Image (cartoon, rainbow, N blue to C red):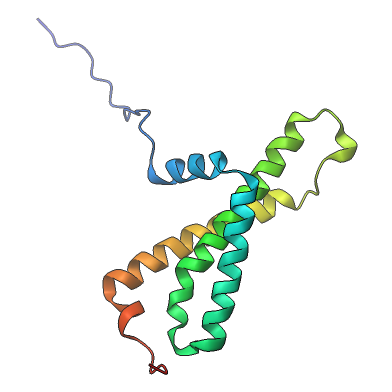
Length: 130
């Protein structure tokens, strides 16, 4: 009795990958939370650069949060404009580009933060004031 033909295509499952889970989390957050996160991230980053410039590595997670918040706001603006029928009120054509750049920067910042933490770069580098 011959065996049935084997399907050599990759099997895809519907399990979410980490970036999909992060995107869904960002889409569930209210606008106020995203704007607040961006404002706190910018203020904290500025404070670190002014008060503790030798430890600039601590700004990586903060800048990741800022980029994630910008991505979330632009993603919501694009989705809202797509739902509206009024084309005259559609956002600028630069919003998708801004969303892409912010998302790429957030993902890069997340990877850089993880690498810096795993290698001890955030903890050990810099001559610092302390």
